[in-house]
Length: 406
Image 1: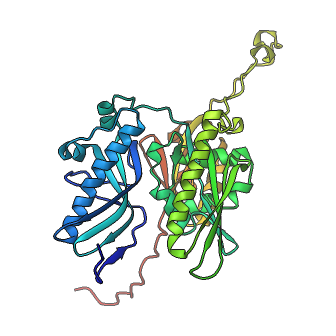
Image 2: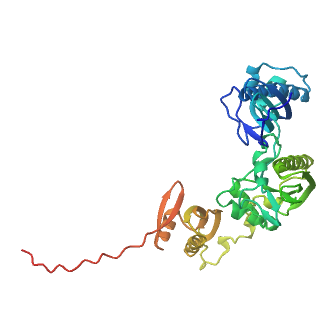
């Protein structure tokens, strides 16, 4: 069948589209699902919309048959009404839309728990501890992480991580992400700094997928050299290269790289290579050997045994519009007598940063000490918030009243 001259190509690489006959929209990063990719359809109808709808329905049927065969339970079909409830998303890998014809290659995602109950297989699988994902793209000789949007970040955003045994923690790329997560960070093996960074994202370790892009000429072939790295020591797990013939296929190149790197991480996890670095585990406080403490009964009568003042951990929030404001607030706290330590829980330049203070006293006493240094303090929710007081204004110049009363 020849295509019409008005035939148009929809360049929608791996776009996730709404469902057919369901009120649930497909979302990036959806929950665990069974996914079938590469489902090809070629459908004609009275209009382009009707052809596309028919193509999606056909893809659902073909996808279910492919999934059931892959699970080893035959290949029986299901009614469209049942499939509409099972399908959680349709991924458009490529599509061509004409006035009366629809040609596409689609991916079908089936709700894992519902599909497993029909197929008679287990829906559960073991996942890893949370790993912070730090993708880095080298292009034009310069590295790029979360400083600005790029093709490598987009590819990891499209990736359906719910099917992976690796629990990826994918930062949004806003706030302090560009400051804390960059190419320079991967060359800093200090465990203390890594522990502080990982704690802010709720992760236990870090994964570092890297791609080096080589463009042969503008708009021409692109070669992607991929590396799967992990841990604070930036250890190399595997590397490979992929090539596409033109710049329009860059998203497909990136998506293929993401899938292969995820497969490498899953393989390393199952074989025991990918595991939490011991240096990143939270350190328990050192046990005190009571046998080394002096017995007060053995002290001379003129020496009175004293015990150390107990310290309290207090959370302090502070407005930090600039780095200077952050340093100023820390300096204020460190200058208060009784402060043993000040650590950073979270840094948010332009927002509210959170500090953890160890103080020989209670929160009320600390509040008074901070206010004595010119700050306004609000307490609530088990924390203190430091606010800069507005400078007091001088009284207005009022001309002398020389008028005689009366």
